[in-house]
Image 1 (cartoon, rainbow, N blue to C red):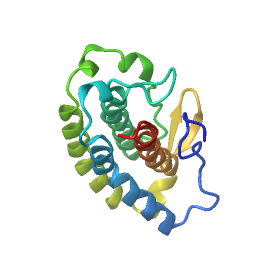
Image 2: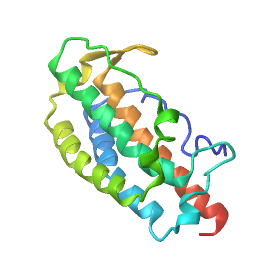
Image 3: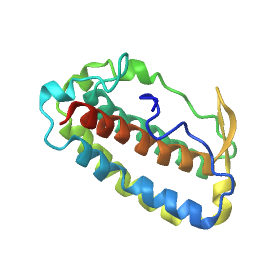
Image 4: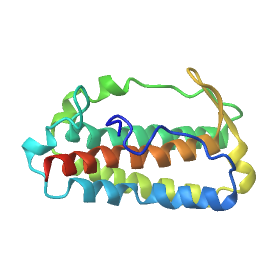
Length: 172
């Protein structure tokens, strides 16, 4: 297994059906609890352990999740309210080195919980035709709301697995 991609690299489903979307929405909604479960009981030394050589620490991963999902939430709202908006990328590696990422994980867990309460509700209100609305990613080109859904559903599983796989390796 490649420690960088413990659930595999992100791939769009071959066929996007209403059932596939619903499964992705439900999986994405479980992300905050899955992350809480993944870090439950870890001490500061464990939180400050990298999940792989050259990778982020568990603490950085936990703080990264609400940062990333907030950006995605805003991207979804832009795509729902504007025609083909150009979204703004951000420097994820730079963000995980900022001072707020050295602190306790509880605020980021609470932020992820609260954000998902809103985001999950928004996902559940979209109509089938909304998923084809477009946005422009400066590095990846034109994408759809379907892409946002499946990327961030994968993202939650991806980072949760970084932590759970590390725990298995270390016997935590």
